[in-house]
Length: 167
Image (tube, rainbow, N blue to C red; front, side, top):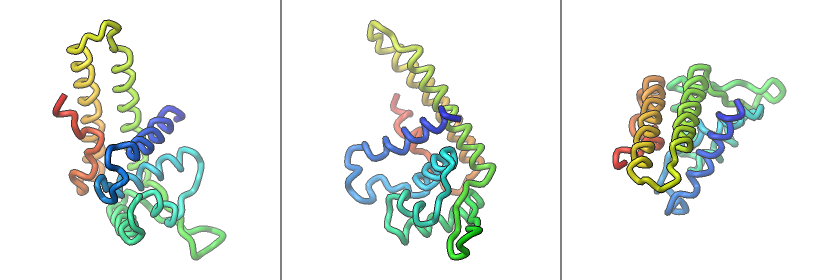
């Protein structure tokens, strides 16, 4: 579990390092940010309020709320009432989405492990290119599993495989 949590945290933090990420909307993918944040928080044993999910979306509140509603409609997230404060609801990943994200993180771990294990010491560029292609293939397999799970979000879910075709 710790490995998948570390990978999810890394993925979430790397999004902020992309060139131009300070330009609002340039890399907008609120649905993915919400799912990734919920995954991280659930693996860390922390409940997620709707307000926290809106912040995690890295988008205006109204946009984030639309994405949360859509993710709930698509049955990827569930709203659970707070037992203490009936005004508040917690968001949780549904069981199938949580399992798909576990598989996705495990596939990324496998890809990174293969990449690290095959790194040549003599800077053999072609071997590096082949390793990256293999890693991208594993990531595409994980992405395909996610798409089968949620099939209606289209290109919004392909960040992980973006750019792999050029390798």
